[in-house]
Length: 195
Image (cartoon, rainbow, N blue to C red; front, side):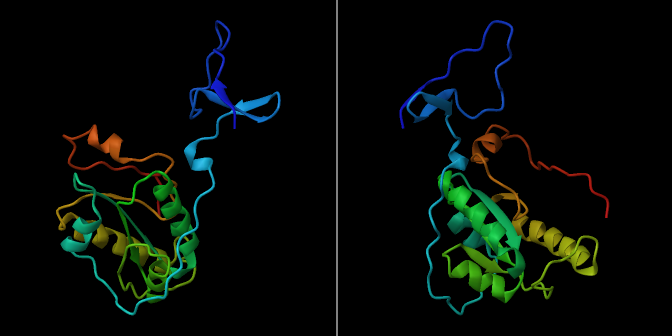
């Protein structure tokens, strides 16, 4: 598509600070719109492979194998019911040229779903439902314990890890942000929910 620099706003007008690019694209002759951000572009399909029968566990060797050259890794976890969330997250990471991720499978069906799409995965064997957890339910509270254990297990791998929920979107590569905070030992965010 034809592309051009976006015109500067009039004096006294604050530009749209949240837009991704300062360029426009011509969608049809004479009609220009802001250039879509990289995360809005179509994503390639994930490959489909035969599912293996192994059940890899999280190890330091596995984490280091998938970590970046400077020892950074993105990790999430999923059950069978939410595989579509992980597929979306992985497609976004690949589109951002960040293939330094691992996914913990909370059940065997989730593990097979990840493996058949060549997503680096490990088996957490949570014993929880493959269906929706339901906010505030017993399964939901048990998932919280598995998440805490996962963070502890990841800390023992010696890799610098960003753990995120599977329903998060990676709109930009997070590694440059963390590289700029090299003196931080732990960074956290919260949605301030009370269970």
